[in-house]
Image (cartoon, rainbow, N blue to C red; front, side):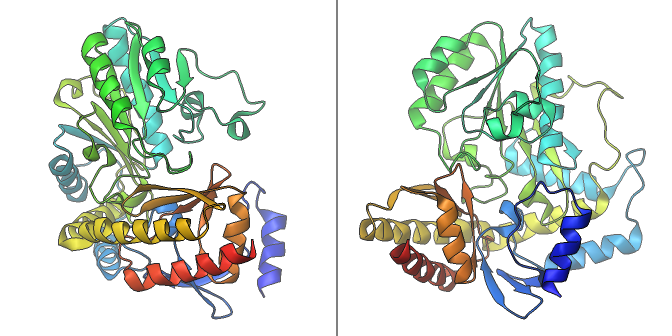
Length: 392
């Protein structure tokens, strides 16, 4: 049955994904089960999407209740799930207004429009992002990225976009000027190899923003929604952005993104200037409310606590295999093992031991499990990692 489905997939679906050789039957908590009954421990969580794990009862109950009321009516109507979720996000961020989208890349496109309109009023045109960043696969997002695989033979891209070296304060000072409208920053990069922003680098951004009056945009798509032990990754630093955009974990498994802006930017878009048919879908918003409620009941605290346990356990592993593990990266339950070899080799070995993880930036093993995991799951991962590193 499994090979038959894989053959059918190859015949019918555009082959742009490198899929794991698993045909999924069901998933629950931090476990995925294939059609042969095999159980896999999930340290990928739908690429940092399933904050509460799979099939969480609170999300299922919220979604079922909303579906029985209505699934979609469009943004021509006032809807309680949207308003309640926006209020929750405002409370977590301290910001003023929320615009809902379907995904992180769609939110990124909205941010570019917002920045450009604000910049037009202030005679500023340029946007700056950083090497290793990943903001989506649409044209605006790609214009702010340096990854050849995603951009090869697809240009020209948007003008007025620059990509400079991440955590390079000297390059930052050389490129920022009075024409700079915004900087787009992942405080913890996901696809870039789970690299965190240096505090010195962030301090330089803060100083330059005071000098040149540009907007700071925080990409919290992967690192947000409690993954690092705080609701947003920027909250680990002494700085507050002007714009946040988020997705992935906030929908708890359903497509949902958001742009969150400060009071000063709440009037930049006028009525009818930006919109989306499905953005803020009530079922997705109901799931988002369940996610935040559960985070507030201790799951975000768990992400910080278990994240520290995972970090020190990985550090012990690094000392055991110093020629293979070069660095342990990240915050909370967004961790990376920077390796001296292709991380895909370790991904394959872990899969043999029924652990699901993935590679980021070639030589980094990315670990972004559900935020509900405990020490038992971490210990299971560590055993598999140690066994895998022995044979590589």
